[in-house]
Amino acid sequence: MTRDSIKLHFLVFLWGLTGPIGKLISLPPAELVFYRTLIAFVALLVIVRWRKVPFAMRPIERLAIMGVGAVMGLHWLLFFLSIKISNVSVCMAGFATIAMWISILEPLMVKGRRFERYELIISLVTVFALWLIFRFQFDQWKGLVASLACALLGAVFAIINGRLVLKHHYIAISCLEMAGGCVVCLLGAFAFEGIHPDGVWLAIPSRASDGVWLLVLSMACTVYAFTEYIELLNRMSVFVISLTNNLEPVYGIIIGALLFREYETMTAGFYAGAALILASVFAYPFLIRASRGWRGRFKK
Image (cartoon, rainbow, N blue to C red; front, side, top):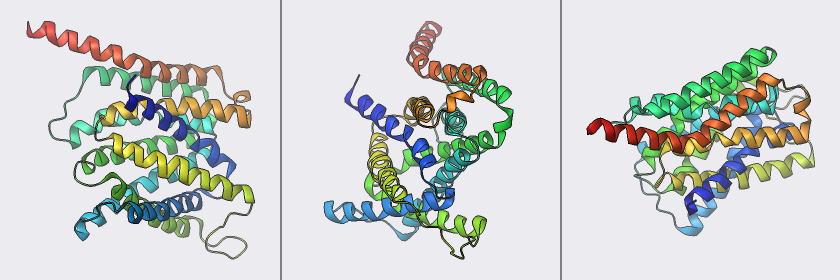
């Protein structure tokens, strides 16, 4: 396993912590993501100044990258909304479809990117796995729909980032995207949650533990993990990174089960679907080799 692969798996483990951490924080989804992106933006701005990161770009380019960050903010908002209205396990299962969305959308959005047969196979396996989960967890359908929408936005966001990293420094991209995500979540908090019962416009952490978990979420799972992910896009494809990211639900489900005893409410159908998602990750290298072998025989 290469150094980049080891780093990617560690990042996926950190992302797997975001679901359980989100469950532990008492804030509503919009405020949670707002504080997460705000803390991350401030930290990244300090890093930009300290490391003298190249930040020269036209104003329109900065606005465009902030717009991509707004997509990221909606992606995270839906992620935590799914957790709040269902549970960590259902959210993580829907989130695992991000590789499926990328296999469909990337050939449409990126010139020269072709549809791959083995990616279609993996996508169909993932869809079937979700059918198993949805079929046996109908009472959790709202959380599943939110997590599927989250995965769709995450795919769009990842594909665009794969192009941006070719033009700009990865820390500069991350900083501007955090700013865009912060703005859209602040607007979301005002638009969808309105004035809280105690008369405040924006909920603040009410427990000391909320502040601690927000710092962990912002610094470890966002500043570090997000910037390293953007940097890896220089050397790894969007689909490969997102397919490996399918392990995030596995980590999240295990951690969520241990912390919140969610395994007591999940059915056999759910675990069958989750096992299929996990199998698709490990099957990917074999499918690539099989596809290349088939192409070689076809050319002969």
